[in-house]
Image 1 (cartoon, one colour):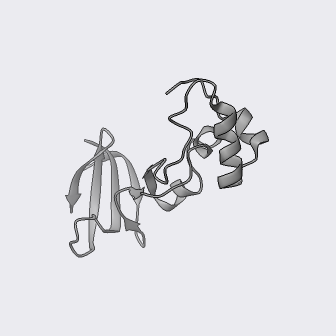
Image 2: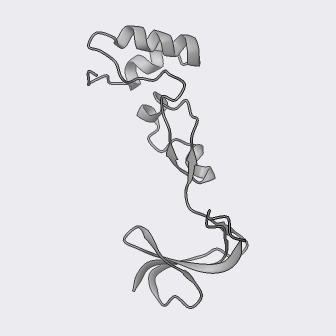
Image 3: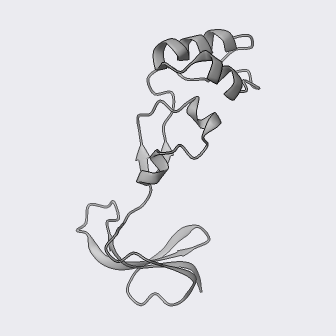
Length: 129
């Protein structure tokens, strides 16, 4: 028995193959099967009229500090993003040497226009790297 069965959706699997109408079985947090007549599951989701895809990777974000006050990264997660890349512009909240918090947060304020008053409360800097 699967945990979840997503039925009736248009599956775009990311392999480059043509979209196809199929069901998706999920077990232990992983896709277990894609096809028709996949059996029963504890939960089901009717995806009729929807597109079913793997989670999207956003390779260019500026969410380094944002993660501390919004761990779900809204609204990115609402668009299917499940993975983000941080620090890819050569700047982020880590690495940061001991005593570097002030410089780092002032830089965020200048470059990303995130107020120092917000980041100094939200970003704990309980690490040294």
